[in-house]
Image (cartoon, rainbow, N blue to C red; front, side, top):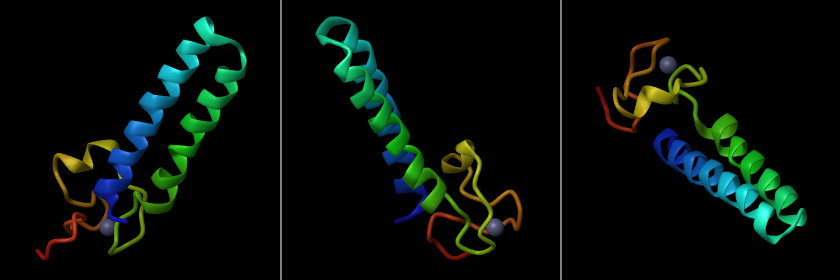
Amino acid sequence: MKPEQAQRLRDILLMLGALIMFSSYLFGEALLWVGMVVTFSGLIPHFLYNKCPHCGHQLRPWTHKAPYCPFCGKRVDGWAE
Ligand SMILES: [Zn+2]
C-alpha cells in the first residue's frame, strides 16, 4: 500500500468512525463501541503504511500535497525523482 492510499483510508475510517459514534446517540450505546473500533482501525494503515519508502520515517499529514519526505527529501508517492 502506498502512503497516499494509507492516508486516504485513514481519513475515511476516521470520518466513518466519528459518524458511527455520533449515530450512537440515536441508535444506542453499542454503536459507540463500533465507532471506536472503526476509528482506531484507521490508525493501523496510518502506522503501517504512512511511511517514507526510502528512509522509513513516519510521514506528516500534509505530505499528499507536497509528496516529498521531510526527512530525506525524496518523493514518497512512488514516482522517481
Ligand atoms: Zn524519507
